[in-house]
Figure 1 (cartoon, rainbow, N blue to C red):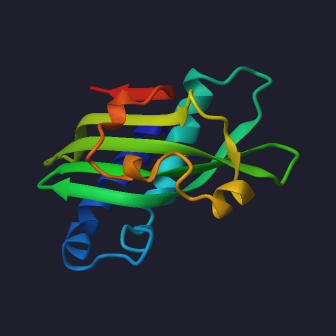
Figure 2 (cartoon, helix red, strand yellow):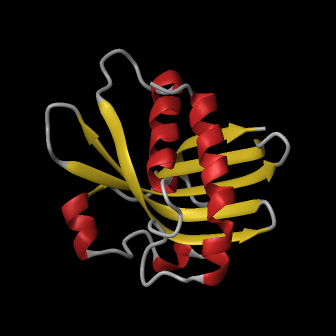
Length: 162
């Protein structure tokens, strides 16, 4: 099992290595294929952080993966909007949360000058993955671009690393 710091470093390196692909190619729907392991690293980071900061001994939530719906980056600043897929132990049912990640990556050595991950929506009930597959703009299609600040949403969970 990797530490939170190791997962963070792998995520930042993956983003940096994806910069060129992202600059020359646009996806049909999701950015997952263009960004390599980014989606699983975001989910892994959230899972590890959640277990250390939010979960109690009886909490059986796990975070599986995410769909990367929109990505913006300029130089070493990144913003990623998406849907986080999660579940509970002893069931195969999965649910989804909206999420937003922003980071500024410092070079030499690679580290996050800033890393913010926001996920969960306090105003709307959680959806099963099946429900989401039928209503992919449930959390408002405008959320998935920079025209509306993601910081205005009432988030269930906030991860902020200076």
